[in-house]
Every structure is written in structure tokens, then in C-alpha cells.
Image (cartoon, rainbow, N blue to C red):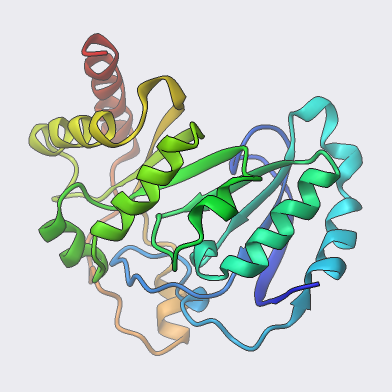
Length: 243
């Protein structure tokens, strides 16, 4: 039995992996993404749950994980920071033959091989494609991301790749070309099941106000969804043609 710090458990998630998902949000994140919509999850608080208890809670949803088309997704925060707890939870869930997905930016504390041994799908959040842009947008070091991806590729893991499209940063042809190169260089093409663009939004502003934190992007307007869709269509056409 291992203890961890869980912010919440969402039942019937439909966008965090295939099928109907239970989504476990773990507290703690070293990044400070300027567009983060979960600032309340930055700090890992005192451990509040043990692995056996969480497993029993998650097993209540097992009837909805039919024919392997649903399962459990670990999100955050950054779940990789609670490595031992994540390793134990993934192990217990696989014993129950439950599909496990990991929603991550790839910034953890190591033990990646042990974690990924019982992970079926990585939902990988691209923050930026080079060290300078990554540092400016997140405050973090992109080199740790490459370490994580190297292990995931070596273990032949399946990927969903996600990119938040922030106006003025990602919504241009130059960034789209660099994103294409980044993905093709760092993830095995045959293991990419899906690529998604998520339009930047400002729904988290109220959270920042409640937490008395300045909102990093100020009055930046949300990304136009129609333009985001157009960027995606063009990106995917180029991506598939260059495969």
C-alpha cells in the first residue's frame, strides 16, 4: 500500500482517453505554464489517500469500462511527480485488466520505465518545441521531456499528442512546421494514435483571482476556435503527406 495526494476523481470523463474514463487528478507540478487552467493543483499537499482505497473507489466504475474501451486516466498537476504512488496504482489497475492512460507533460522525477510498464496510453501535452520557448512559457527545462520520451519510445508506447494553441505563439505557419518536426523527431510515428489541437481559453481566470495570483497572459483573447480548426486541418494534411 502506497499513499498519494489526490485532488479529485472525475467519473465518466469522455475526452481523456478512449471510452468512458475515471480521471484521477494528482496534485503537484513543477511547471508554471502561462495558460495553466489548474493552478490549484500546482502544490503537492499532504498525502490524503492510499492505493488500496483508491483502487476500491475506481473499481466501482469498472462496469462502464466495457470491452476495453474505457478505463482510468491519471492527470494533474503532473502525475509523474508522484512516481511511487503512480507505479502502485498502475500495477493494481492492470491486475484488474483495466486500461490505464497517463496525461502528462513528461516532467517527472524519473522511474519512467517502472511507471510506463503498466501504462497503455500516453496523452502527451506539448508545451513548446524548443528550449527557449519552453522556458519562457512554462519556466521549466525541456531536456527532462526528452528523457521521458526516450523511455516511452524504447518501450513502444502508444500516444495521443496534444497542443494548446495560444494566439500569437502557436497560431502561425512557422510554429506549425516546427511542431511537425518536433513530433516526428521525438515520437515513433506508428505509435501516434491521435493528434489534437486545443484552443487557448480564459476560463481559469477566476481561479487565479480566487488564489490571489496574477494571470500571466493578462487580457489575451481566447483562441478563435474556427481558426484553430483550420490550423489543425492544414497541419494534419502536411503531417500525413510528410510521413
